[in-house]
Amino acid sequence: MIDRNNNKSIRAAYGNALVKVGKENENVVVLDADVAKSTMSITFQKEYPERFFDMGIAEQDMIATAAGLASQGKIPFASTFAVFATGRTYDQIRNGVCYGNLNVKVVGTHGGITVGEDGASHHALEDVSLMRGLPNMTVIVPADCKECEEAVKYAAQIDGPVYIRVARSNVPDVFGEDYKLAVNGQVMREGKDVTIITNGETLVEVLDAAEILANKGIDAKVINMPVVKPLNNDIILKDADSTKLYVTVENHSIIGGLGSAVCEVLSENSPTKVLRIGTNDVFGQSGTAKSLLEFYGLTAEKIAERIAEKMENL
Image: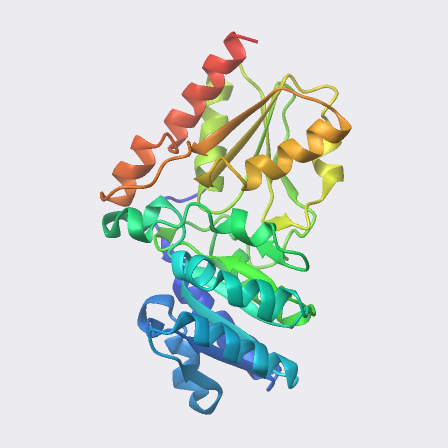
Protein backbone atom coordinates (compact mmCIF):
# COMPACT_ATOMS: atom_id res chain seq x y z
CA MET A 1 0.00 0.00 0.00
CA ILE A 2 1.10 3.55 -0.75
CA ASP A 3 1.53 5.69 2.36
CA ARG A 4 -0.08 9.01 1.43
CA ASN A 5 0.68 10.49 4.84
CA ASN A 6 4.43 10.52 4.23
CA ASN A 7 4.85 12.80 1.22
CA LYS A 8 8.29 13.98 0.12
CA SER A 9 9.58 16.83 -2.01
CA ILE A 10 10.17 15.69 -5.59
CA ARG A 11 12.02 18.97 -6.19
CA ALA A 12 14.45 18.07 -3.43
CA ALA A 13 14.91 14.71 -5.12
CA TYR A 14 15.77 16.57 -8.33
CA GLY A 15 18.41 18.63 -6.55
CA ASN A 16 19.92 15.55 -4.91
CA ALA A 17 19.92 13.70 -8.24
CA LEU A 18 21.86 16.55 -9.85
CA VAL A 19 24.56 16.16 -7.21
CA LYS A 20 24.76 12.42 -7.87
CA VAL A 21 25.12 12.73 -11.64
CA GLY A 22 27.49 15.65 -11.14
CA LYS A 23 29.72 13.51 -8.96
CA GLU A 24 29.76 10.76 -11.57
CA ASN A 25 30.42 13.06 -14.53
CA GLU A 26 32.36 16.30 -14.27
CA ASN A 27 30.86 17.49 -17.57
CA VAL A 28 27.48 17.95 -15.87
CA VAL A 29 26.77 21.63 -15.32
CA VAL A 30 23.61 23.29 -13.98
CA LEU A 31 21.93 26.55 -14.94
CA ASP A 32 18.99 28.24 -13.25
CA ALA A 33 16.89 31.35 -13.84
CA ASP A 34 16.96 32.95 -10.39
CA VAL A 35 14.71 30.32 -8.78
CA ALA A 36 17.33 27.83 -7.57
CA LYS A 37 15.79 27.72 -4.08
CA SER A 38 12.47 26.72 -5.62
CA THR A 39 13.71 24.27 -8.26
CA MET A 40 16.18 22.98 -5.65
CA SER A 41 19.07 23.15 -8.08
CA ILE A 42 20.64 25.12 -5.23
CA THR A 43 21.67 21.72 -3.83
CA PHE A 44 24.03 21.32 -6.78
CA GLN A 45 25.24 24.91 -6.41
CA LYS A 46 26.30 24.24 -2.83
CA GLU A 47 28.22 21.12 -3.84
CA TYR A 48 29.74 22.32 -7.13
CA PRO A 49 29.61 26.15 -7.20
CA GLU A 50 32.10 26.36 -10.07
CA ARG A 51 29.75 24.34 -12.29
CA PHE A 52 26.60 26.26 -11.44
CA PHE A 53 25.38 29.32 -13.33
CA ASP A 54 22.56 31.56 -12.10
CA MET A 55 21.39 33.33 -15.24
CA GLY A 56 18.96 35.64 -13.50
CA ILE A 57 15.43 36.19 -14.75
CA ALA A 58 16.58 35.61 -18.33
CA GLU A 59 15.24 32.22 -19.34
CA GLN A 60 15.98 32.61 -23.06
CA ASP A 61 19.58 33.46 -22.25
CA MET A 62 19.76 30.42 -19.98
CA ILE A 63 18.75 28.04 -22.78
CA ALA A 64 21.03 29.73 -25.32
CA THR A 65 23.94 29.47 -22.89
CA ALA A 66 23.09 25.83 -22.20
CA ALA A 67 23.19 25.17 -25.95
CA GLY A 68 26.63 26.77 -26.14
CA LEU A 69 27.89 24.67 -23.24
CA ALA A 70 26.50 21.51 -24.85
CA SER A 71 28.29 22.34 -28.11
CA GLN A 72 31.54 22.24 -26.12
CA GLY A 73 30.92 18.82 -24.60
CA LYS A 74 29.19 19.80 -21.38
CA ILE A 75 25.91 18.22 -20.18
CA PRO A 76 23.82 21.18 -19.05
CA PHE A 77 20.70 20.86 -16.91
CA ALA A 78 18.72 24.12 -17.22
CA SER A 79 15.99 24.59 -14.61
CA THR A 80 13.13 26.97 -13.96
CA PHE A 81 9.36 26.80 -13.52
CA ALA A 82 7.75 24.67 -16.23
CA VAL A 83 5.62 27.50 -17.62
CA PHE A 84 8.78 29.55 -18.27
CA ALA A 85 11.06 26.63 -19.15
CA THR A 86 8.87 25.69 -22.13
CA GLY A 87 6.81 28.77 -23.00
CA ARG A 88 9.15 31.71 -22.59
CA THR A 89 12.06 29.79 -24.11
CA TYR A 90 10.29 27.89 -26.89
CA ASP A 91 12.17 29.58 -29.74
CA GLN A 92 15.54 28.95 -28.11
CA ILE A 93 14.69 25.30 -27.41
CA ARG A 94 13.35 24.75 -30.92
CA ASN A 95 16.06 26.47 -32.94
CA GLY A 96 18.99 26.54 -30.54
CA VAL A 97 18.70 23.08 -28.98
CA CYS A 98 16.47 20.67 -30.91
CA TYR A 99 17.36 21.78 -34.44
CA GLY A 100 21.01 21.01 -33.73
CA ASN A 101 20.13 18.00 -31.56
CA LEU A 102 22.26 19.40 -28.75
CA ASN A 103 22.70 17.61 -25.44
CA VAL A 104 20.66 20.03 -23.29
CA LYS A 105 18.42 18.87 -20.46
CA VAL A 106 15.54 21.25 -19.71
CA VAL A 107 13.85 20.70 -16.35
CA GLY A 108 10.54 22.41 -15.63
CA THR A 109 9.47 22.32 -12.00
CA HIS A 110 6.08 23.53 -10.77
CA GLY A 111 4.18 21.72 -13.52
CA GLY A 112 0.39 21.43 -13.66
CA ILE A 113 -2.43 22.81 -11.53
CA THR A 114 -0.78 21.68 -8.29
CA VAL A 115 1.34 24.82 -8.43
CA GLY A 116 -1.75 26.00 -6.56
CA GLU A 117 -2.14 29.55 -5.35
CA ASP A 118 0.24 31.01 -7.96
CA GLY A 119 -2.69 30.72 -10.35
CA ALA A 120 -3.24 30.49 -14.09
CA SER A 121 -0.14 32.46 -15.09
CA HIS A 122 2.08 29.84 -13.42
CA HIS A 123 0.11 26.66 -14.15
CA ALA A 124 1.93 24.89 -16.97
CA LEU A 125 -0.84 22.86 -18.60
CA GLU A 126 0.60 22.76 -22.11
CA ASP A 127 4.30 22.18 -21.49
CA VAL A 128 4.29 18.48 -22.39
CA SER A 129 2.42 19.32 -25.58
CA LEU A 130 4.99 21.95 -26.54
CA MET A 131 7.96 19.71 -25.87
CA ARG A 132 6.66 16.48 -27.43
CA GLY A 133 5.98 18.36 -30.65
CA LEU A 134 9.68 19.11 -31.11
CA PRO A 135 11.90 16.77 -33.18
CA ASN A 136 14.73 15.09 -31.21
CA MET A 137 13.14 15.89 -27.82
CA THR A 138 12.64 13.21 -25.15
CA VAL A 139 9.87 14.01 -22.63
CA ILE A 140 9.72 12.48 -19.14
CA VAL A 141 7.14 13.03 -16.37
CA PRO A 142 8.22 11.30 -13.13
CA ALA A 143 5.70 10.33 -10.45
CA ASP A 144 7.76 10.23 -7.25
CA CYS A 145 11.19 11.01 -5.85
CA LYS A 146 12.82 7.77 -6.94
CA GLU A 147 11.46 8.04 -10.47
CA CYS A 148 12.65 11.65 -10.62
CA GLU A 149 16.16 10.56 -9.62
CA GLU A 150 16.10 7.85 -12.28
CA ALA A 151 14.85 10.33 -14.88
CA VAL A 152 17.77 12.67 -14.17
CA LYS A 153 20.25 9.79 -14.36
CA TYR A 154 18.71 8.59 -17.62
CA ALA A 155 18.79 12.10 -19.10
CA ALA A 156 22.46 12.48 -18.20
CA GLN A 157 23.31 9.20 -19.92
CA ILE A 158 21.54 9.68 -23.26
CA ASP A 159 22.70 12.09 -25.93
CA GLY A 160 20.22 14.73 -27.06
CA PRO A 161 17.57 17.12 -25.77
CA VAL A 162 15.44 16.01 -22.81
CA TYR A 163 12.56 17.70 -21.02
CA ILE A 164 11.77 16.55 -17.47
CA ARG A 165 8.59 17.84 -15.83
CA VAL A 166 8.65 17.97 -12.03
CA ALA A 167 5.81 18.75 -9.64
CA ARG A 168 5.78 21.51 -7.03
CA SER A 169 3.78 19.52 -4.50
CA ASN A 170 5.18 16.83 -2.27
CA VAL A 171 4.43 13.29 -3.37
CA PRO A 172 4.24 9.85 -1.73
CA ASP A 173 6.69 7.08 -2.54
CA VAL A 174 5.39 4.74 -5.24
CA PHE A 175 8.57 2.92 -6.22
CA GLY A 176 11.22 1.08 -4.22
CA GLU A 177 14.94 1.78 -4.15
CA ASP A 178 15.64 -0.87 -6.80
CA TYR A 179 13.40 0.85 -9.37
CA LYS A 180 14.91 1.83 -12.72
CA LEU A 181 13.16 4.25 -15.05
CA ALA A 182 10.42 2.41 -16.94
CA VAL A 183 11.38 3.81 -20.34
CA ASN A 184 8.90 1.51 -22.08
CA GLY A 185 6.14 1.95 -19.51
CA GLN A 186 5.22 -0.33 -16.62
CA VAL A 187 2.09 -2.25 -15.71
CA MET A 188 1.34 -1.33 -12.11
CA ARG A 189 -1.85 -3.36 -11.83
CA GLU A 190 -3.47 -5.98 -14.07
CA GLY A 191 -7.12 -5.74 -15.06
CA LYS A 192 -9.47 -6.81 -17.84
CA ASP A 193 -12.28 -4.24 -18.01
CA VAL A 194 -10.53 -0.91 -18.48
CA THR A 195 -6.95 0.21 -19.08
CA ILE A 196 -5.81 3.44 -17.39
CA ILE A 197 -2.59 5.08 -18.56
CA THR A 198 -1.07 7.87 -16.49
CA ASN A 199 2.14 9.44 -15.19
CA GLY A 200 3.41 12.06 -12.76
CA GLU A 201 1.40 13.06 -9.71
CA THR A 202 -1.76 11.42 -11.00
CA LEU A 203 -0.26 7.92 -10.83
CA VAL A 204 -1.04 7.59 -7.13
CA GLU A 205 -4.55 8.97 -7.71
CA VAL A 206 -5.13 6.40 -10.46
CA LEU A 207 -3.88 3.52 -8.31
CA ASP A 208 -6.34 4.53 -5.60
CA ALA A 209 -9.07 5.00 -8.21
CA ALA A 210 -8.47 1.43 -9.37
CA GLU A 211 -9.20 0.22 -5.83
CA ILE A 212 -12.44 2.22 -5.76
CA LEU A 213 -13.43 0.76 -9.13
CA ALA A 214 -12.67 -2.75 -7.90
CA ASN A 215 -15.24 -2.24 -5.16
CA LYS A 216 -17.72 -1.36 -7.91
CA GLY A 217 -16.93 -4.57 -9.78
CA ILE A 218 -14.74 -2.91 -12.42
CA ASP A 219 -11.32 -4.50 -12.97
CA ALA A 220 -8.83 -1.78 -13.97
CA LYS A 221 -5.39 -2.24 -15.46
CA VAL A 222 -3.01 0.60 -14.60
CA ILE A 223 0.01 1.56 -16.71
CA ASN A 224 2.64 4.06 -15.62
CA MET A 225 4.02 5.89 -18.67
CA PRO A 226 6.77 8.27 -17.49
CA VAL A 227 8.29 8.66 -20.96
CA VAL A 228 5.73 10.45 -23.11
CA LYS A 229 8.15 10.72 -26.01
CA PRO A 230 9.38 8.49 -27.51
CA LEU A 231 6.23 6.57 -26.60
CA ASN A 232 6.30 2.78 -26.42
CA ASN A 233 3.46 1.61 -28.65
CA ASP A 234 3.70 -2.06 -27.63
CA ILE A 235 2.51 -1.65 -24.06
CA ILE A 236 -0.41 0.49 -25.25
CA LEU A 237 -1.50 -1.91 -27.97
CA LYS A 238 -1.06 -5.15 -26.00
CA ASP A 239 -4.67 -5.25 -24.76
CA ALA A 240 -6.27 -2.81 -27.19
CA ASP A 241 -8.39 -5.49 -28.83
CA SER A 242 -9.75 -6.86 -25.55
CA THR A 243 -10.18 -3.93 -23.19
CA LYS A 244 -13.58 -2.19 -23.19
CA LEU A 245 -12.18 1.29 -22.60
CA TYR A 246 -8.89 3.15 -22.49
CA VAL A 247 -8.52 6.04 -20.06
CA THR A 248 -5.68 8.55 -19.91
CA VAL A 249 -5.17 10.68 -16.79
CA GLU A 250 -2.73 13.59 -16.53
CA ASN A 251 -2.13 16.83 -14.66
CA HIS A 252 -2.04 18.61 -18.02
CA SER A 253 -4.41 19.70 -20.75
CA ILE A 254 -6.09 16.81 -22.53
CA ILE A 255 -4.89 18.50 -25.73
CA GLY A 256 -1.40 17.55 -26.83
CA GLY A 257 -0.20 15.64 -23.78
CA LEU A 258 -0.25 11.98 -22.78
CA GLY A 259 -3.90 11.58 -23.78
CA SER A 260 -3.26 12.83 -27.28
CA ALA A 261 -0.14 10.67 -27.62
CA VAL A 262 -2.06 7.53 -26.64
CA CYS A 263 -4.95 8.39 -28.96
CA GLU A 264 -2.54 8.81 -31.87
CA VAL A 265 -1.17 5.31 -31.32
CA LEU A 266 -4.59 3.70 -30.92
CA SER A 267 -6.24 5.49 -33.86
CA GLU A 268 -3.51 4.39 -36.24
CA ASN A 269 -3.20 0.80 -35.03
CA SER A 270 -6.27 -0.37 -33.10
CA PRO A 271 -9.16 2.13 -32.87
CA THR A 272 -10.48 1.98 -29.32
CA LYS A 273 -12.88 3.97 -27.15
CA VAL A 274 -10.86 6.45 -25.11
CA LEU A 275 -11.70 8.72 -22.19
CA ARG A 276 -9.17 11.51 -21.60
CA ILE A 277 -9.07 12.99 -18.11
CA GLY A 278 -7.13 16.19 -17.48
CA THR A 279 -7.83 19.90 -17.79
CA ASN A 280 -10.35 20.48 -20.56
CA ASP A 281 -8.87 23.23 -22.73
CA VAL A 282 -8.97 25.77 -19.89
CA PHE A 283 -6.50 27.77 -17.86
CA GLY A 284 -5.89 27.05 -14.19
CA GLN A 285 -6.92 29.27 -11.31
CA SER A 286 -5.71 30.14 -7.83
CA GLY A 287 -6.40 27.68 -5.02
CA THR A 288 -4.76 25.02 -2.93
CA ALA A 289 -3.34 22.06 -4.79
CA LYS A 290 -5.88 19.77 -3.11
CA SER A 291 -8.86 21.95 -4.00
CA LEU A 292 -7.70 22.29 -7.61
CA LEU A 293 -7.26 18.55 -8.04
CA GLU A 294 -10.82 18.18 -6.78
CA PHE A 295 -12.18 20.97 -9.00
CA TYR A 296 -10.56 19.62 -12.16
CA GLY A 297 -11.56 16.03 -11.44
CA LEU A 298 -8.09 14.62 -10.80
CA THR A 299 -8.62 13.02 -7.39
CA ALA A 300 -8.99 9.25 -7.05
CA GLU A 301 -12.69 9.59 -6.26
CA LYS A 302 -13.43 11.87 -9.22
CA ILE A 303 -11.41 9.70 -11.60
CA ALA A 304 -13.23 6.56 -10.48
CA GLU A 305 -16.58 8.33 -10.83
CA ARG A 306 -15.85 9.42 -14.41
CA ILE A 307 -14.68 5.96 -15.41
CA ALA A 308 -17.62 4.15 -13.81
CA GLU A 309 -20.07 6.51 -15.52
CA LYS A 310 -18.38 5.98 -18.88
CA MET A 311 -18.36 2.20 -18.44
CA GLU A 312 -22.10 2.22 -17.76
CA ASN A 313 -22.75 4.00 -21.05
CA LEU A 314 -20.59 1.83 -23.30
